[in-house]
Image (cartoon, rainbow, N blue to C red; front, side, top):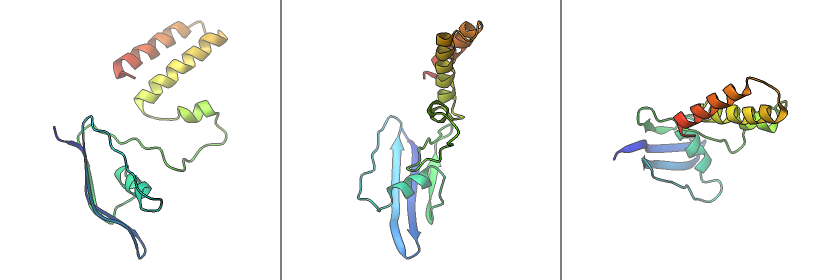
Length: 133
């Protein structure tokens, strides 16, 4: 079993302050990983690099084909005009879209908003089954 994610020789500094140097991390399929360190040591910066939100000063990040990195920022940018539901399910991720559509169908069912809701609900449940969401 090979790595699904490999970060090799990653270094990052801000000005004269080196956060980390020459870090290598490999994650295999099914493996769970935790980053534990004191505040200010670069955990968020390292995750930003893995997620492609920040450039490393040196090193490379490689993902196995068809692997995507999902990431919730430490300080997410929220749209104040959205409801909590809209913010929670605001995503182009197919899993999140399937769950959102299912939740919407439940809401419509409770409000008796749509006569076509049974079809919408069945489509949402089918999509969740396909995605195993």
